[in-house]
Length: 247
Image 1 (cartoon, rainbow, N blue to C red):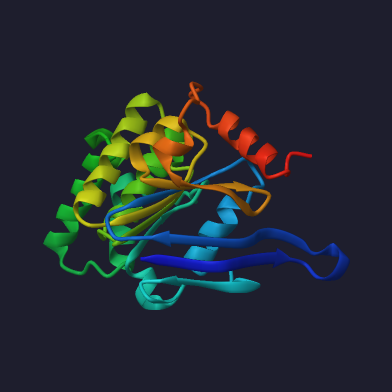
Image 2 (cartoon, one colour; image 1 turned 135 degrees about the vertical axis):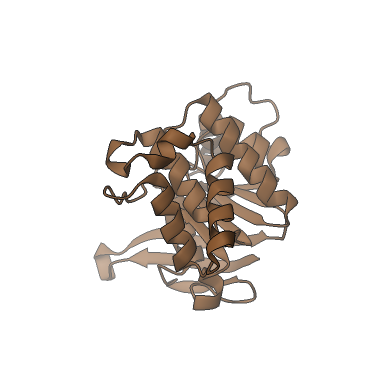
């Protein structure tokens, strides 16, 4: 569903140019989950935006569904959860998810109602919370709602930037359960995370990014072998040292 070769993204020009992504290759197949791991500033969010087509690469290429990233047909098959989702404070949770369903082309009223309730149920938003306005939502509730809005049209591809950030353990479990449902329906997921539990449960393979480069890549269980920490920091640090990028 996603293929990138020699992907480069540079901000600015001349001596002020900053390379955020430096020659990344990646492949994401149907029914799989690829994790982007790495410290802040490693290029994870830039890679996600290039996948969505909201940024254009400076070099290399990236395709989704066999064509250029960001085209309309690809957006219709994609659900996206940013690290900080915008809140439409005057709307209720249910109204927000219904709005996203309409924007993504779910037209029939009965079908849209069913999909909205299914998405809200899967992310664990209680009936009373669904009636609340977003202005009253906690960060964790807003995170759950953003996931429901991304998934309500049942996309083929989910792109998630730190999807469990701000969630309690129950919320994390419910988010991972939704990703499992998505996988069993044949969907693919690209996600960035700092959380080992999220990575281990959700991801088949991972890229460890260090300063915009791929420091390590492969099956998640192989990359994490011997690391007893619940944090991914030891893996990121050891990868940076091995690549000579820790200075």
